[in-house]
Length: 444
Image (cartoon, rainbow, N blue to C red; front, side, top):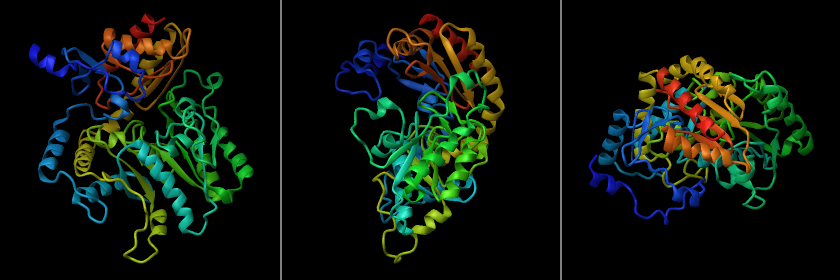
């Protein structure tokens, strides 16, 4: 790259952009800038490669700069840049919805599109409330989340979510919300590969919540099959099956938030398939377009959709949606992405690599300050002992990994999260682990 091109790509003023989920002052003192990406790597404006060990934000499951997806977006932009999906529609939206419904288990047959995981979670919660309302059960208004859960940043998502820093600055949030206990216990689960043996009984806490509030007031339970953003907490064995049974017992809807686990992260199109549990709704985003164009959505079971289809044919059934729901470019990207997943067998690839991935991560057990390592699918987390202040060691690891080790890591406090694209090679798994070990030693 020429020096002139480099200068054009490096901003001369960092002040105007307020970065999300970022310590802005620290970042702007020593920015981590990315200029381009291809396959398993990002590149800085100077051309230095950064190995992507996180699929960006858990989303670029097919890697970066895949020609098939890029060309589909370009064609769609030239042919139809935008079409409303309020009272009108375009063919790719129906095509993609059919493809997603075909991947979902059971009778999860209908897809409602939005633009992000946050919107998907809020949409699912609204659908749950409206579903009970149209069936004459308007008293079912209570929503149940889980401690350490992450369901995006809308008011609904942070209300049912259980990550303290995401909640504490924003007031009382939605009324009528309760939380299941988190499923993680280091004493019983440390250094577990896959689903922990201990913890399935924690689902029984839902019985206590029902007893406290009465089933007639509860609309839905929302959980991640693997709690990702809080530090990769796989569901204990039997946990999701117990939740399904309790929800069935009391007529409560069960929502799986699969914004992270959807589209191959755990070796299946959806984690629901891995665990043999069919929820009433699945939220998705991220991997549906491999991160190329913003898109999210909710997949609902046929009886939920049918419950809304009772009034006059000319009347709107659900007063909800977004300007860009089912955007043509996002739909084109989604169709091309699903084609690529299918033709390159990337979900099956994740299954095949899981054991090697977990074995490699566990070699970090003896590194300084490592308190625990967890892994499931092509996902892993390493808990580091805090330094003087919580998150200080984690942020130092983030800086060192990018500027010195040449690898992109994700941080949740003092937890390193590793979630590479599904195209990762066995040699690159070794490189990720080596560079992570180097980072851990550097911040000891």
